[in-house]
Image (cartoon, rainbow over all chains, first blue to last red):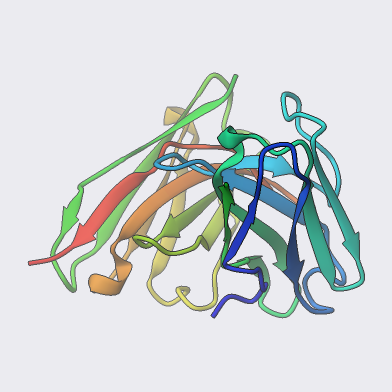
Length: 110
Length: 118
């Protein structure tokens, strides 16, 4: 059972916009920034969004992040087949004094 | 740019100690935090702990009693030791640079699979 809650799966067709939610509590998302990671099949996770809504250099602007209260969301617009991956949210938890991850969302491009 | 590479045994006997090293290249280990994560087969990510180049550490409370992370600045390496392992510790282990305060991990090593089995 992960501290942050994500839907196990999401899907969309090419060109569509999809969102992935991440729900937490006052001790994690409610008081700390959220980061998102993309894990392509068979590879290591890669930082996708940091500090709630910032994109590292090289990440397309089709990817965007937002946070409100104790929840966060990752949006992918103009969905492409190469976006098929597992997506994880993460944040610092003040109660556990450590980083906590969501369980991950497997995105399928139909 | 900075690159990380995990190394260590791929097979560990039950109840023994898992030992891995992460070598940092393309940049200095100094002035940064460094973390270990793991991912059991077909499961999600778990943060194990971090170390600052000065040696300051913080561990995941669920693993704290079995984990030791250390740093060797002269070799630009940091290491993970996990004691009394069981099959539940079978996972791909990743090292990554950890940005303090905002707590994001970038970049990551490619990961190394450690299997606990007799």
